[in-house]
Amino acid sequence: MYISDIMTAAPEDERGALETKVYRELDRLGIGYERVDNDAVEAMEECVEISEKLGAEIRKTIVVCNRQKTEFYLVILPAGKRFDSKLFAAMMRTARVSFASPEDMERVIGLTPGEASVMGVLNDSEGAVRVVIDKAVADAEWFACNPGANTSHLRFRTKQLINNFLPAEGHKPEIIML
Image (cartoon, rainbow, N blue to C red; front, side, top):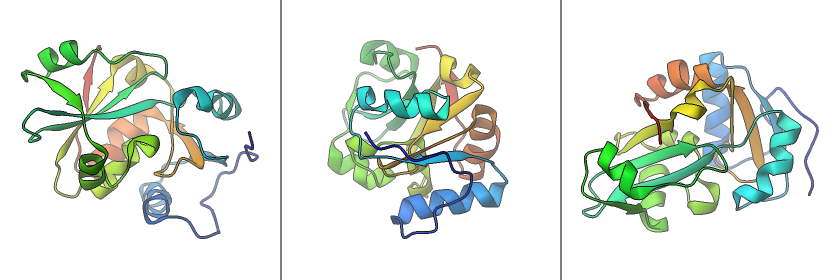
């Protein structure tokens, strides 16, 4: 798998709209980051080498919703952690949750299942999605994810995600033990 050297500035070449917006927003907020470009990945197992290169685990991001599709949750977990929908539904005080369809994901965060990322909140100007972070992720020093494209990954301090980035985008993260 191709993985570039680590870079500390936004790409100079043409990127997708969300990825471009992510780098602009991180720079605007003064959040330092390191990034790599890589071959496209669609599964967490493919991210192991990228995690090693960045020195931070790429986090699993899933989008779930209630049966009525009136409540959406962007859930961030450690890469190897299994998502327990019954436990999650009980913690969120909702009857049941299931994985959001690709169409619903596209509508609420502008991303599809193979590219899901917390950075999708930049596409959620209406606040349709609640960000839920597993406590193990929240307690880690580094946070790593894709910037809205599965051909690039970045890392920055988890505290900056929780205290700076998400609040600036109108999302107060909920931290729970899943």
